[in-house]
Length: 281
Image (spheres, helix red, strand yellow):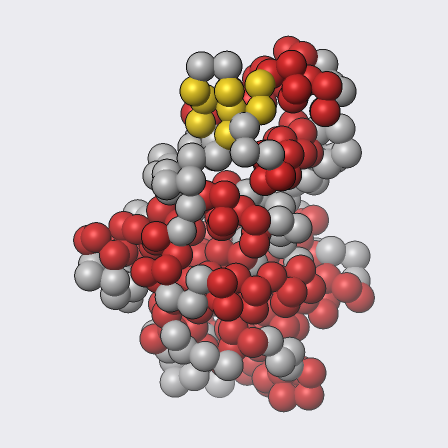
């Protein structure tokens, strides 16, 4: 066995040992229900696990099936989604449910390309769904996985590209137990993120998220919460309630209309109780 193989075997032992001692007991890991895993994986995009632990059971309780979600109004979905951030994901999830119902007879496909074509599901999320639902040995990378491999194999390298990491992901993949192996990588990566200077700073993909306070994203969230409590509002009411620059409000309002969050009827703005259609990504 060469030096490289010994290093990889040592790495795998480290990851498995950590997992056996410190694995996280997360509710979406206790199921192989494709719908539940679809919901959890979209929720986990750009959101901390602690928040998802609160919202995931509420969401599943309110929309217990793909069909129930596909039939729900935007307003009802966003009401449950509040606190998760990045509200567009809720609309993508709703539209994905509708498409799966219409095109795949309500059965979530186990094909990466078909999943990736759904709204809001990129390559990493599609791979996660396939691995965690069907236990297929798919090679993929996401934030925590990237962190683990950079820490162990690229400690003295900057601007590490994913195409340099992916061969190592493939070489160390447990083809017999891929689901648990990826759980282990993600748990170990989460631990490293809390105990070290973030190894992902060495990634060529690393970016610092812009400040939320005072951002357009914050304004859009405030607007959605406003409409959740009011059936319809006219612009003058929106200006008064938000107390922001009118031009900025107009721009954010127009975006929400274009993206399908709310509808405009003459001078009035509000949720369309029946509309669940959004554009792909």
